Every structure is written in C-alpha cells, then in structure tokens.
Length: 477
Image (cartoon, rainbow, N blue to C red; front, side, top):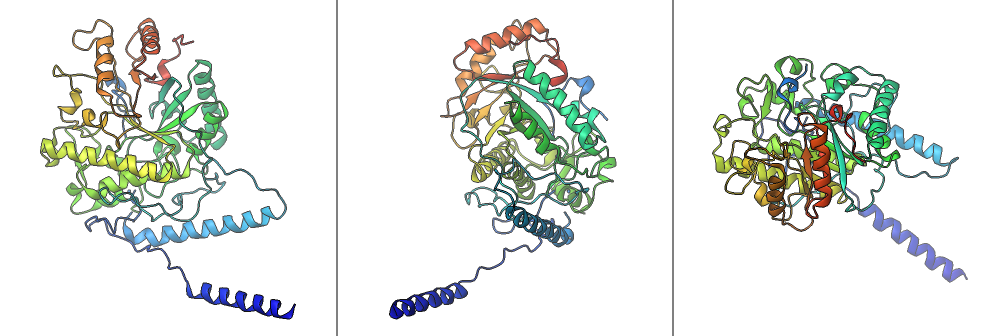
C-alpha cells in the first residue's frame, strides 16, 4: 500500500510543477489612439450612431474614447466583475445554480461604465477584426432556439416612438414597453425590430457608444437600468422574437456632441484635428455621418454589433436602408470604392456576429425600388449597396427585407411585380426574403391585402410594418 501512496504523491507533485511552468499571459489592453491607423493587429480599443426605413418627411427628425480614458474604463469593468464574481460565489453556497441570464444584469446604480464581455474570437484575416478589448466575463445570454422558418410578422419600433420614453424611470420604461409589446402580441405579430442605435448612441450600457437621449433625455447621460435587457426579456416572455436595429453611419448634431464624454470614439473623432477622416456633413443635414471607407469606423460598427450579439439574447441584428448619406464624392470616394466599402462592412458584420453567436440572424432592410435593368435601385445610386451580390452569395446576410412601400397600381414600382423581382434576386442558400410595408402612408385595406399576398407567395417568408405608431387600424389575423 505504501508504494502506491508514494507513487501517487510523486505524480501529484509533478502535476503541480508542470502547471506552475505553464503561466498564461495577461490580455493586451494597451490603448490605441484614434489618430493611429487601424490594423489587423491593433484595433482592439473600445470604439464609441442610426436611421429608419424611409421616414415620412414630416417625421424624419424629432427633436464616442480618447484612448487616455481606456485604462479607467477597463479598471471599472474589472472591479465591477470582481464584485459580481464574489457575490455570485457567496450566493452559490446557499442557492442552487440558475439558468444563464438573458443579458447583463440591470444595476440600481447609475451606470455609465461600458458593458463588458468575454474576449471575442477574431474573425477571418480578410475582414476587420472583432475587438477583444471588452473582456470581463459577462453573464452569458440564454441559448436561443434554432432559427425557424415560420412566417415573420414583424413591426419596427423606431426612435420616433421612443420620444415618449425620454427620462423614464425603470418602472416607467417597463410599463411603456409592456403596453407596446402587449399590443404587438394582440395584433398577431411575432417579431419586433427595435431601434437601439439611431444616432451613434446606445439604448444599453455600451463600451463603444454613449447613452441615447431617447432614454435619459440627454445625449450621453446614463440611466440606472438596462433598457435592451428589459426589452429582450419582455419580448421573449410573450413569445416574440426581437431584433436589435442599428444605423451604422449617422451620428449626432453639434449640440448633441457637446454633452457626450470624450471617452467614446465618435466624440474623439469629432474633436480630432483630422475630423474629416472620420466624419462628414451631408448636405443640409445637421448630423455628422461617419466615413464608410475608414477602417477604424468599420471596426467601431462591427464591435458595436458584436457587443449586442455577445451580451444579449437577441434573435437578430438589423440594418435599414441608410448607408452613404449623399453623393460619394462628398466622402472623397469613387462609386466603385464606395460599393466595396459597404460590402466590406456587411461582410464584417456578418462574420463578427456569427463568430460570437451563430444563431443570431443578420439582416438588412434596403430601399425597395427595382431599376429597369432588374437590379435594386440603391445598388446604382449614392447609397452604394451591392444587394445583387449580398442576396446571391453566402457570407453577407441571413435575410433581406426590401421596403416595398408602394400601391398595387403604382406607376413604376407596382407592389406585386416589385415583390416578384426581389424574389428573383434572392438566390443565396439560407437567405430569407421578407417585405417591408408602409402603413404610415398606405390605407389599412391596401396593407391588409399586401399581407395576404405575401402569405400566399412561397418565395416570401414574411413582412414587417413601418412603424408601431401606425398599426392601430390594421386587422392582421
């Protein structure tokens, strides 16, 4: 018996010695200045903007980190997570383990600190890398079911609806969301596409973007709860899917930038002497628009989407029809370069999202017009999309949702033939076709008839209504 004990002791001591020699290095959290060029190896700093499908013009507008603050942000994240781990350890000694949280836990303290996440795996070398800067072990989102092929019956919930939410308390926000989601459920809809980044801002605590004034009432001012977490939970409790809707390039006005802390990339870029490398003014628009061809800008947008997919149990991430905001010459780009810039962003978003949660769907709702040559109108204009490519090749989209906002008898874009042309464009395996509809401008009878025609079309998998405030008079069941 003694030889056995001795051999066991020798084996255990050897294991201890081997483990002590195999140390793990600390992650590289060194800051990168916004003025430094982005590279595949050094774009991991937190980088700190979004519109709607074809706003009615009368409603279109209702009324960002220098790197020096990065260490402070990282320290805050690490302290918060250490406290959470200790609290979790104490609780686990007296309570059974619970299911993973659907997203970050809400805090009773005002939280302007960025949301944390585990280190993100890098995407392929041909795309902008997903930042690993935010890496402090958040609660894992609940596992989503496999995406099903049921008919999507969706509605957009835009920042215009959120004007009524400004300055809401947690209970006030919950009450408003419950009312909205109850209505959506009662209408027989099964999906809500909720805007969480209309103007380079955020409806949740983010490492990359400042708080939205649609939540707190002031751009950059935090609230002491997590609106996105609350919306995800409220949707899933009712059996609704929820897609997080972001606008990639549109940001803030000068007045809004004035209240944003300089710890966010968009504010850092706004204050930079080479601002035009990062953002431009578009015509008479009072908002600044990010430069689509800047690799740091692309990385910021990808990091922000990955942050959502990593930390929240959303069913999808969604872009609308806003890409380039005006003629590409205003950005210093050629038409060919602009189109490639947009495709690079879409590829990067798709691969970044899939790298952290393959179940999260990624889709785009472009302008719905089809030109005489049979190609999407936005592929040939300043928007600089390449939908013909994205809908026919893998690696770009899970779904496309063209905004076919016209009547049956429209002179150039009649509803049925336009829908048919889109169905002919969508040939990539696994890419679903949904149709965006416009109850804000068409009669209830016309929308209801379009919904019936969509249901009868085997090539189309569902629809989405723009927007929540305009669905009251519809009979959809």
